[in-house]
Image (cartoon, rainbow, N blue to C red; front, side, top):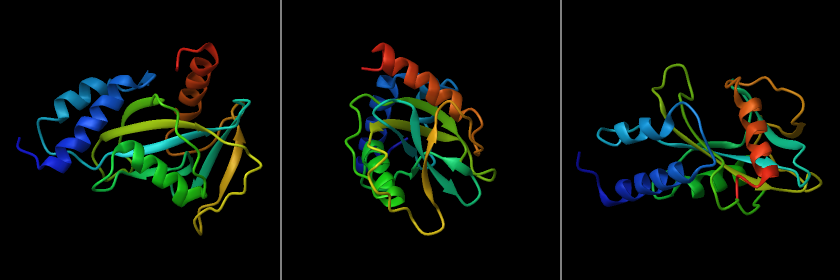
Length: 173
């Protein structure tokens, strides 16, 4: 399949981040290699914002997805990393530096009517005392990692905890 240079660059950035992600879910790397041969849905990117003690995560109350990490669709002209940082700033008003290595890669559908696409999760550390400026109708809150949360992706709490365990052990560096 022939792609324009921008789209090809975006997919190369996504493939690089997918390969270097600390965790892989849903056989995402294999899925991406196969998906690169055809048209792709927009990529998803999110940020797992953790407190310095790695005991809390920042979540957004999405209108129908429930509690989810800040994130969304990667827009034309940006890499998945840039899209994740932009979404975090838009949804919470925070601009912490994302950790160098992506946290996770997964394959997801962000709505029951949408096909599967690649989702890249990045991580950042932020101070929970820093003021949040969420989007109207989507409050943001800090939530303890030792408690579950109700969201569209029920596996998210365990996946984030798995990443935190890797961070604590140094395996996510």
